[in-house]
Length: 523
Ligand code: UN1
Image (cartoon, rainbow, N blue to C red; front, side, top):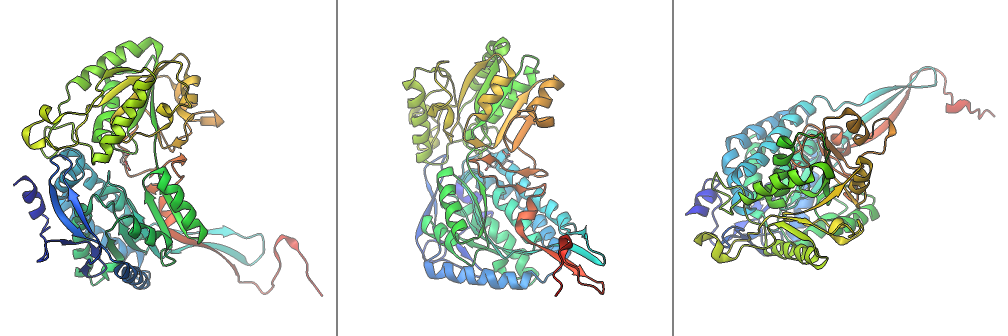
């Protein structure tokens, strides 16, 4: 059948008790709660996965610490070589892994494969990084002294990832963490367990082949209680969390209260601004992908569109026409552009957003309702399909209203018209979240302002694009957001610097021992 072809290609077969093991710490296990993996397109139960019991979690944490003690001593370029082999193993299974992402998460085929590609790319990056995680030598103000800034492995990195990027976000963390000499313990979303097991199997086979302890890349599947135990454990030196602001706020406090390190990738509320001189033949399809791609379930998805009055009509005419071409389909079918939402809960989030838009009298340009079973192909009638929606709230609804302030993790996008760029930038910045933003223009003066060059009041987000949509960032630059998005940075750029501990080492190679700042303390 449709599902078993995908599962068999990755050796995801239940053991004699009918469940699949959801714990890996060098050995596979799992005697905790049983979670169901449910296909969002068909509603069928794909498998039952048995997660970590409290004792198993404790053992996994201890094994992670032991694995770290082993791995920290492996020379960084050797660690890079392990990463290179992981990259090769992932590339060999790219289509199979991409398919399970489509099957279990619900994103369309090309996007499922695309996120495996992101893991491959960041693994390449990590291979290079393993020879470039350099400290530096700083000039001392004292004669015969020198100061070294030294990066050292950090310890155990706990990765708590979200359902929407069940492969790539783990990849960003694993690649940097591994290159840095850490052990990583992964607690994936409880609704994408199969994807995480398949990914871990591929990585484990490389570790085992190289006689590296498997707990260098451990896995503990479970619900909230397992996540909380990872977050609270003193054995976890850094917690990297991707998910909601609500949970991130809690995790931030908990980790801070035990003085652990924390890296947060929380909500986005991303805006596109289109100026009169924009090339609409590029801006319209890019915005379409940003708003509708992944059925609006990227943290970088376009939630708000701000249009200059002079092009608004034309832009919306063309964009609505694209929306009207969409038909829901099986995400595993190569031609499908609109897959399901991930869970029934996402359907509620969609409906809540529409109630809220309707309650203030918004104009719904397209969409506005979930698909009823009878509008869907027979085998998709139990799927979580909704109509991507474009809405124009009345102009008097203030920016402080929930319609503008709330991140709706579904394909619902709100539109507003502006007259001056400054006004649109203020709206862009006028929300709590600060992940991604996009300006469409061919005027260098607008670009300079938007980028905040020379201290100009531009976009305050972590991602500030020009003639590129809000989603689909490459791995080369650091990925993350400011303000309520949590200030964390993953992936490229200087993100690796968070995965090491830094020390400043002042070395005196002279025959005197002078104090800094010229202080004298002679008796
Ligand atoms: C996410 O939605 O959590 O920039 C990550 C993008 C992707 C990653 C999104 N590269 O849209």
